[in-house]
Length: 320
Image (cartoon, rainbow, N blue to C red; front, side, top):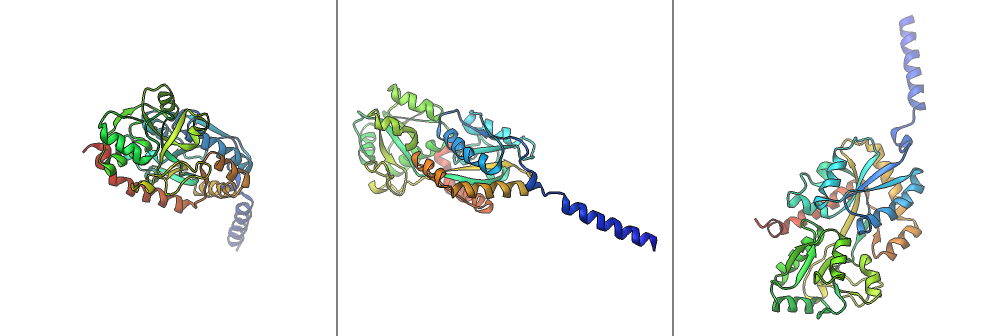
């Protein structure tokens, strides 16, 4: 009888202790969280990350630290996060380029294979081709005609294995033209090369060139979007010029595999609040990007669906 009473008392005590111990998601984060951005400061990945984390700090009550780690088309930063402890204190903030890197074998795994995707806070529909203001083409049709008349002579700056690399290959395939494709490095390095007249066209995002356009140094010669941009009504889309090239650049947050699902869900819930914050929405709009919210499963599915879409360009990307 005493043994039974002892057992019942032990079970009752255990129940009380379990009720008093907070769940993992209520503890985290207890200190600063680091977010690896596989790009240099000043590019769209860096800017979008810093804007988003500014609002996440208020939701989660801890500092959110950006760690810029460029190199090998994102592989350096991505591998750093894969190898990190899955304790919720180091995550990846990156974009669609990771899928291109996987197709070109710069990266060993797909995003959903290598990480636990937690959120997708930004979608950028402003991907474009930019040129100097004095270039002899002003829209997609004129650009295509000029490149067709001068095959291999118009230089296009990209970063091998990047999202913009996919864009130029897709246009070459759709229009039957040939650029002189040059690896010019990161977003800021490409803009410097264009400013200096070392290249003719760059793939970039409108938010990064808006001040150059305003100052009369650059112009957007074509948008890879399904519609024109609010705030840039004169920039034509490739789609309206007969080339159905629509590439939305999505930015996501992903933690190492085996990270506590409670942490992932807590981060996602906070990201939802940020996405609904009017100040965040306005700041994103000012940068020509869209504040976004997807659930955990929806984010992962979106990434996998986009990867399947990019595989259509595998031969062009790999040359095999």
